[in-house]
Image (cartoon, rainbow, N blue to C red; front, side, top):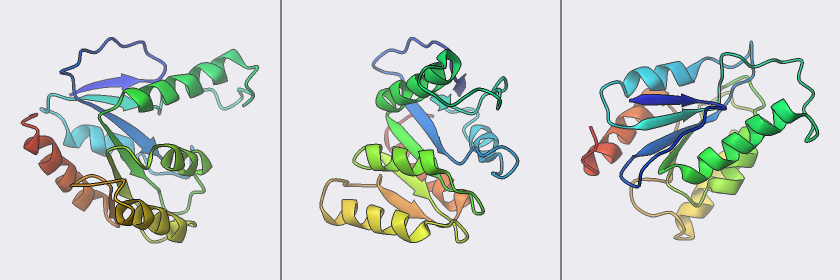
Length: 166
């Protein structure tokens, strides 16, 4: 497993399998679930895009005119586009509006979503996931909704193993 943390440049080949970690980051509120996912995929031949970065400066003005903020958002959008699989986690007790936005933008892709009880818009996430599965946009093992992070990670491992990536 190779972690690619925002806003690092990357050059991947067509055979490289990539996972994007989309989900709650709210500093001081959200659990560091990304660390748990990274640990689970040690030993797997995957590249993991992680938007949570060690050098994030919370004083950055979140405006398009701010070059640091723009770089972060554009990196995330590009990495989402470049991913083979997107993993969403909605941490209980957070709002995570950007994660909701990303789910809306990428719900038709290969995704796995974990939304435990306690997330303030769990009903919205459930309905979106149900609608995409029912409409036939999402097929197969991806497009699944889980209440538990560990259960979702087991399903992702099966998904990766089906593609003979380990």
